[in-house]
Length: 76
Ligand SMILES: [Zn+2]
Image 1 (cartoon, protein in one colour):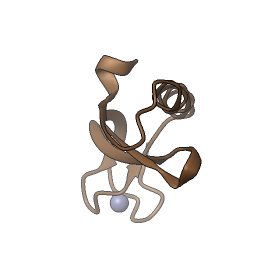
Image 2 (image 1 turned 120 degrees about the vertical axis):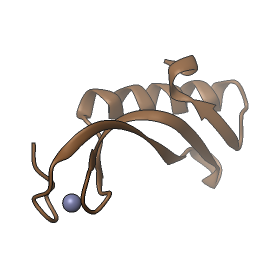
Image 3 (image 1 turned 30 degrees about the horizontal axis):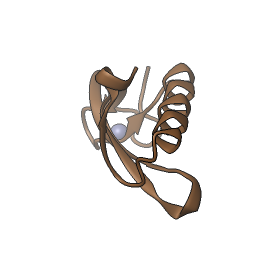
């Protein structure tokens, strides 16, 4: 897979992703698996990971986490 911005090589890595939940709160999910461009740093997150992030955000809302950091690996 090539970067959509610069056509650089995408490598498997992890990224940190802010995720908006209800009430305008934001949780920051760390160590999210992603493809990251070697040249420009653009990251691409696959659809199944995005779905999982939605579950993590849901769970955070239900457990009354209104802001803060969640580690993807621990939550998944
Ligand atoms: Zn790029």
